[in-house]
Image 1 (cartoon, rainbow, N blue to C red):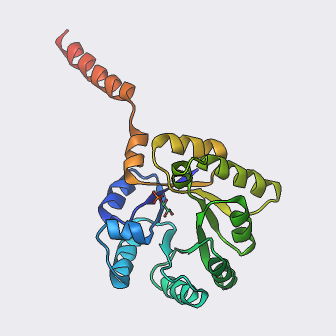
Image 2: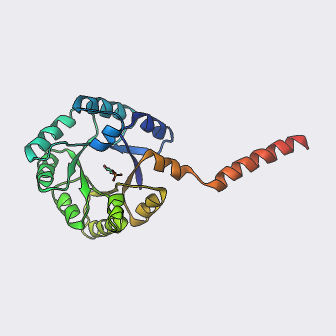
Image 3: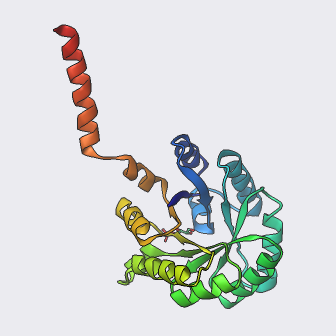
Length: 219
Ligand code: E4P
């Protein structure tokens, strides 16, 4: 399972990139706002800076809700960077725009997916990846990870090439569960990447090795 960072914060992306495990980045308007990125020009600058740090797909979300607007934005986004994934919502307009843009060879991240049916539609419309939102489903008392597992199983059954991108990941256990479910990618906040590195026994082990090393020099 590949790991993407789910943030528009360039400092977090720089720190994550240093670990050498980040294969892509997902952004959205809320993440841009959180990172202090306001307006299309600033979004473009941020995305271009992100692409200079991470040599992988960078998801850029459309703002429009109508087909024409989505297509116009998608066609603009592909001029920004070399590996854009145009992020389109799981709506009727989104599916229509997915079909048009994917037919033109663009890579699509189908976002805001909350059902197997939406994932099936996105795959038919040519999505490169579909993003089931795990945390937001958990929030309303539905098992988000069950949706990830179901989409993986059904896509395998029909040899559908669309990748399953577990999104709205809230904690390190979600990463383990997404991997177990067979997700191709998990996009995670920087805080979750940090959680993934941590184990108290590792810290204790490092401290003990150092202690023993110091003792060995004395005796
Ligand atoms: C990723 O592509 C999504 O935009 C993101 O994971 C949403 O996460 P949230 O539910 O924490 O906002």
